[in-house]
Length: 531
Image (cartoon, rainbow, N blue to C red):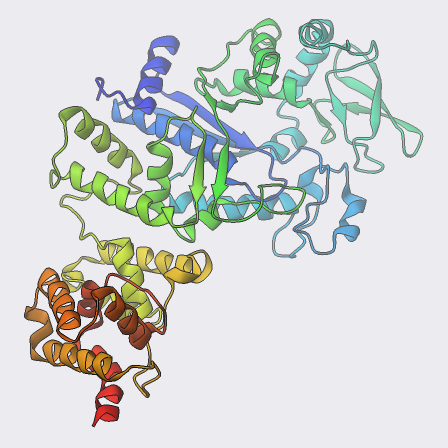
């Protein structure tokens, strides 16, 4: 493993090298649960998980922590909340105190947290969750807040290095939620040099003094909070988006604050790039509610392939989550990676090493002992449409499906369900079809076209199973020419008969997948009409 060139292994080696031997390396991620956690945010989570896995593969202890910054401010009512006007009264409150719009959880923050936590488990990510509202409201960070107050001028100087407009003289490295209004519309007006902090509530024009050792109302601003927690939690590795890694951004200031204020050191990090969405209209935007979350991706990709998308892409490379026809290619690429891992497809040694490591990191619950039965996604879409979305019936036609163990059957069902959802929601219109029901002859055929159709039906009736796909394709060509038609012309007529469209799946394979009984039932009315 030490010779692996996969980016997760390279960063795992860097963590060990820069942080030295430890009983357990702390890998961290986190976000504010202010709405749907979109796939761009998920990129950070899975990047941490992949490096954590790489560390464990080296025999190292790992503590993977995920912080819910649920004591952050509720800044804007998301478009996804139906009765948005009713929630405007909670603006500037801590998110953890805003009620759940659906009334199922104790807060809006907890509703968003539970949603992602369940999805993360599906893709094999099970970090230790830390709820920062609990930490702040129980005064667990009292020492950290007091230290920031003691080092107020040092923090101001650090921030001003990267600002064009210096912070005001009355700036304080702490914010307070008013006990009168729950809002952070307050100003710090005094500190006794120890634990007592006095603030002014701008809305009520009242002053209040709180004890940092027992108050649920005080918290550090983000640029101080982040490095404070690095020090408290002993974080060794945490990546961040390129907005945080920009020159003078929050990572730059946090690196100085953790060292100069808290006497700690910044974690090993890297910058990850943005993710776009392809094949699903609109741009990701929290203000409009057009967010693509992990749940949306799992609707059309099984968990292993979701992991594969990220494990196979360097974090500093921008890429698109595809919902269009690229979905087929992504499944084909994953299946090829799987065949390479099990030695069923030969490539160069360098390529094989790369693909094997990507495949290992893509698995949710470890690698199976033998190659799982592969069900090609494109073929699956045809079978599902033939059987009108009946997953079990479609899978029963797949060779060897009845011999799979329950876990591999579960994976196969998951892929089939994803394929059907993709067909129904995102596939191009000309990719979809419905088989004719065989009750009537709707396609307009002249005598030669009908005769050719009956000739093909007679061939199929002999023994479709015994006829190879290439042999059947050639036979269709020959039947067309024997009846005075160009094959392309005959194909169009066949598609009209079968799916009432000008085109459809590759014809020979389509007929074999459909089966003789189904094909003959569709053709029979044309035979009757001829006689």
